[in-house]
View 1 (cartoon, rainbow, N blue to C red):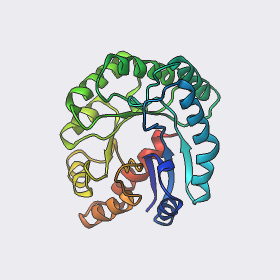
View 2: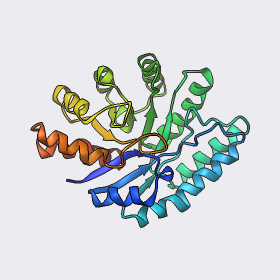
View 3: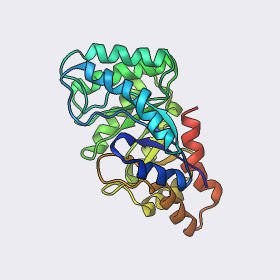
View 4: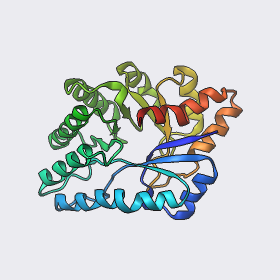
Length: 254
């Protein structure tokens, strides 16, 4: 069984964790930008993006994983000053082919500022036909998701280029009906392998993606292999399992 973890923040984890992932069959990880505090200046994000591309990708590769690097301005990481500098630098990274996706972006509180920042980044992604990874919050998720879908439609984003992540089972149908990939995050406080099994049984594998959101919060570097093992025990076919853990992520990052 092969795996691609489409949503990770590897820079918060040790080489031991990353090597464990490689040994367990995880071929590649998508390193998503998330700066854990609100930066004072946009230049902080510029340095952060450069570090991910120039240094973190090499560290990940040295542990046996193929790195994809994504950059974006997370709703909790909008700089207080010089936002335009960070946005223009992100556009330059896209233009020069330095990143694999615009990520991680989205909305958290649903504020007007978050919406403005998201719309700017969606326009970049649409112009360059880039994949987009959308964050949804732990609280007020249904309301925020509705707002996100409206914004995506308004900005004429191609749904198959979008992963809407951290989706709860009750909202899966809404995401699938929109036509986007639906991210199921296996992590303490989010979903379990049993939750994934229930969603897969109800909705099929065509647009589902399982990820770990590996990072600074409690999260399991082996979330994907453990999910695969559970699904196998539940009687799902190898093709179904590999589709949501490998082929769908690979398709999105093409």
